[in-house]
Length: 108
Image 1: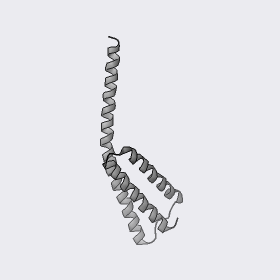
Image 2: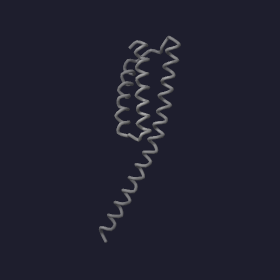
Image 3: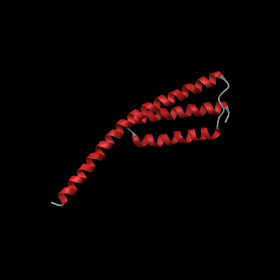
Image 4: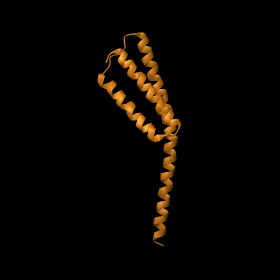
């Protein structure tokens, strides 16, 4: 991969990350998972290419900006998904309590 392709790959990862953030904001968790797999595949290709750091200062600045944007969006996605995971945990806990109650009353 040349530097232009690397920068293009980071830009594509940023575009996918924006879609992931939109899905998280809309609480579309299945879509978030699917979209995140697309980004994972894209970034795996980038890591496999083992790109050298850009020598052009403008490209380096643009790449750094894209990476910072991706990381900031990831933090927002994690925050939104933590709230969802808390809700799921509450539901699962109430189901466990319900099962215990049902089991306890089976013997009565």
